[in-house]
Each structure stands twice: as structure tokens, then as C-alpha cells.
Length: 221
Image (cartoon, rainbow, N blue to C red; front, side, top):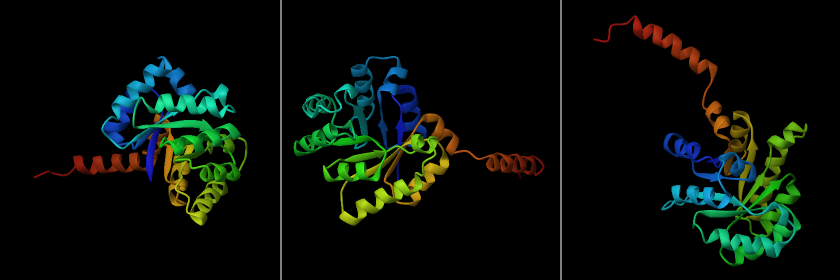
């Protein structure tokens, strides 16, 4: 199981690389806007942080062009030239699927994002996506079952020996992280705060307080 940080804030990424040994980064237009930097500047800064590694950075194509596969391909080629670590993000739309297939033939990896059904994920796999990104937080917020969703994607991938990696996205809590790992997803991507909170537990804090009390009452030598 790999952990990707869902962020375009370089200070967060630097911390996560140092303290958590994250395996990659996913960005989207909201994260880039939150960075306060122009798109091309921030993705190149992030790319430089991963230079010389095999860790990936998913960078988004223009969402306005979601059904113009030729425009997605053109932008994907441009972005891929900036860093060997870049994986090109495009949505689970007809244009996105077609662009994915074209780019794969050229050796450019794609991340099919905004996946909300197993059928969408299947088509992403068929078209040669390097990653497919099922969004669980949004679906759970709408009262939908996401556990079966992820299980179905894993089963489909295994049934037909697709090479696509399942990158569970829009993760909101530690339960979702653990479930994705338990059923065989390859990667989870989550925000800085979600990861930080998932590494903590109130009973750990309680136990530490008790152990500290015993420690203080016991001679060291």
C-alpha cells in the first residue's frame, strides 16, 4: 500500500516526504489555487522535489477540455515533458478515456480521475490507465456505499489482470485508509490533515500519559 499526499503546498509535501516517507503526490485545480502560485510554477517546483526518484506526481489537465481528447493529449504531452515523474490526470469522460489510450501508446502515463462507478473504472483499465482514482469521500457524503465500490474495482482488476493501479481518492478518515488497504487497493491519497489525524489515537495518548507517570516514579539506574 502506497500513501500519496493530496496537495500542491510545497511545505506540506516536504514535511510528508521527510516524516512520513510518502510515495507520491496528487494535485488538482483546488490544491493549485490553495498554493497561491501559478499552475506551471507550482507543478515544476513539486516535480523538482521528486527528481531522481521513481515516485509520481499526478498533474491535472484543463477540466474545460474534458471531452476534447485531442486537447487533453496535446496538454498531456506538454506536461509530461516537464518531468519524468509526472502522471497526467484526466477525467473519467469519453474524451478522457480516449486521450488515455493515445498517451499510453506514446509511453505517457495517465491518472483517470473523478471515478464514481465501477463501470467507469473498468473503462479506465481497458484504455490503459496507469492509475484510476475512485473518489470515496464525495460518495459517502452523499450517503452511498463506497466499500463495495472499492471491492468491485479490485475484483475487476484481478479478474482480467489489468495493470492499472487503484488509487483511492477523496479519502476523509483513517477507516477509509485502512479499508482500502485491507481489500487490496494499491494507493490512497489524502490531505495533510487526514494523514496526520489517522496516525494518532486517543488511547495512544492515554497510554503515554500513564506510562510517563510510571516512568517518572521509577529510578532510571
